[in-house]
Image (cartoon, rainbow, N blue to C red; front, top):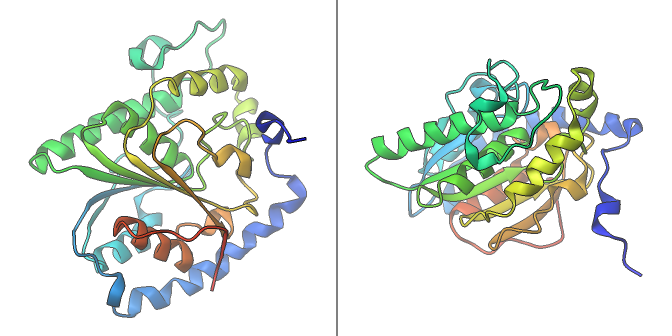
Length: 273
């Protein structure tokens, strides 16, 4: 008898946090792809790409990935919205969130809508870049929470976003099935309210192609929460990597290059070199 999908949703066990130390190895291994010629990985069609950082990170942290993408012939830029603090640094009320979120009433609002507010800002950013680029479609690559923001921008801007690539992104439950859950609960946030809001958004499918790269051994985001069961054009690719190392891992970079080139992607668990 199969296990209900909802029963698999849970944050990683605290005892497995040591797995994130593998990110240090990824940081060392990324040097070689940056130094070697692009070779067959170089693209035949340059994309305009915006790279979105994860929670607590900014554009500086993702400079190596952008450098690699430029080396392949793409035009890669940062998201330009500072450090990703999940929108909790943006002063707002629930009424400030766009109607597309259909936010339900809440008795004591404690910034539960901060990520939707951040997504609204990213929608404005993508519109701005799309116009500046003369209507050229944009590809979004988002790490962790940055992938959440990228997905929601693509959901709201189907004609402007060509493709979304996510790295270790929780697409179900918001922060509820991640190690960040304790942080947000500590601020008094109702994570069940957030989870219901995320589920409501799925009634509007994401039309852009999605490549969702995740790690079954991720010690930050529960693996089951990275599975997208709603989008019509999504590919799930698993790698054996730390959550914090996904943006530095050469295997992940190679998968991103192949996705951008429209190549078939390998199934099963992709091992780091």
